[in-house]
Length: 208
Image (cartoon, rainbow, N blue to C red; front, side):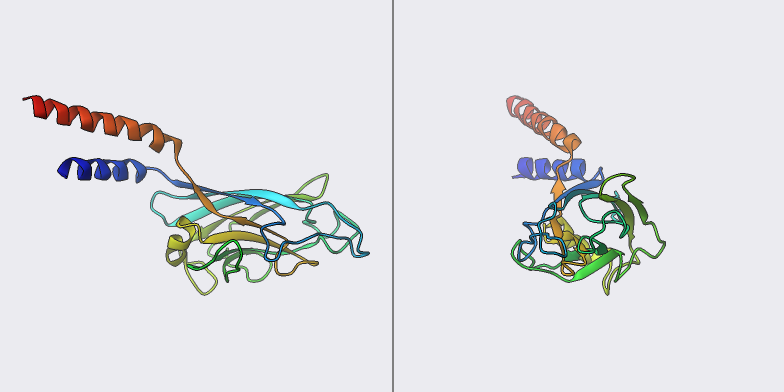
């Protein structure tokens, strides 16, 4: 029993030494219900989509992110139509959220509510050509929409959160992406080493 508990402790020690990396793939189909973007005339428009990457620091006192979004108008002038105009962007979370349900806003970084304010770390970069842009920011411990980063970390780390971009046509959200943890490559490379060392050590002690 001590042998296996030692392995578990060693694995936790390895994983605790690195920042936590998370990612999200934003699509229309993840919205509840799924969205079908159209022009104000009712004609189809290009489907919006995007990706987002997050890093929770070693001390778990902040979470930085960068999201790149396509076919949502970041300035209101990238297209002539109003339906695709970006009006808000948030992180939503709840212990009970599922892919088929929604959750409250826990941190806003564009529009209302806006919570990246202690300090304001948002960098907003519309595409020079084309429709969309990149936005980044940092969720610090004191920030949150009636909550805090510390309170929401269990939801974020357990897959009960998502990032959402809202437009004129879809004020409840046009594209959404579940936030999921990406295993650290360094951790997975280290795990076999830890296991092999532990097994070899046990065999050596058994033979003595």
